[in-house]
Amino acid sequence: MSSIIRPTPGQRTRRLVVLAAAVFAVVAPIVQNLAGLGLNQAEFAADGNTTLRVAGYAFSIWGLIYLGILAYAIRQVLPQTGESDLITRMGLPSIVAFFGIGLWIVVAALNLKAASVIIIFAALVSLLAPLLTYSRSIRSLGRFEGDRIFLVWPLAALAGWLTVAAPLNLITTATAFQALPDALSPQGWAIVAIVATTAVALGVTAVLRTLAYPLPAAWGLLGAFVAEQADGKPVVAFTALGAAVVLLLGGVLLSFRLRPGVER
Image (cartoon, rainbow, N blue to C red; front, top):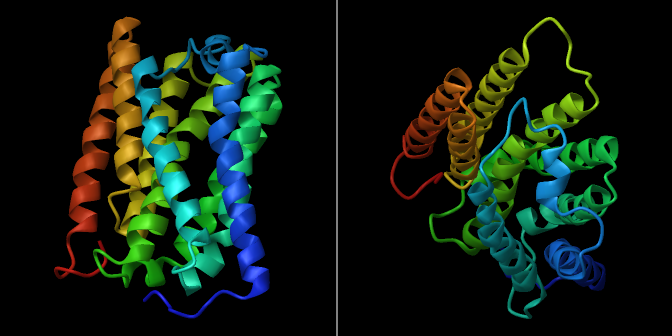
């Protein structure tokens, strides 16, 4: 449950850093796109996206993710927001993740592919590890409790999207470097990436039991279906579509299988 305990000076400082990291994450792509500094995200991904890619429209989800990030951060600096266990525990991980996704824009503009893979996986792990560690506390939150709406949903949604974006970034980079192992064809590696991503996403959903996580992941897989279908790769495309459907249905079943009002 959310606490009404007022944050200490140190906790208030941490909250300000959270806000700064959130602002950096949101502003970085805006500045990069407006100023035309280096490669934009589409140009960066174009070099190596022949193995697996996601349709451009799918990236519109960042608008909702950024709104959630800002809501999470702004709530923390409001004087009426008390310090809860989850606010304390997720503070540093969210700072790492927010600075990470902002820094990813910078390294992508500079076309630093290997660095982009390291950064995006670091952002993903920095969120997934504590979300899973504190999953019991997350599941115990009430349906409309502040920490569920303004903390769990924004962070889980970001983690869900990164669960798709990180392996996509990896396979795109490996393709650009011509480093995909010859054990499988490029389409084979694309299918492996889709199946592995779906398996991880279902596993995380089974623990968190909140739809905020699988919905963005399923959206990304649907975007892969659209892109691969347009590219004339029906096997990869329908694998992605099947994965999106499985993840969506699995997310609903796993999130709502408990008694009403608890663990949503």
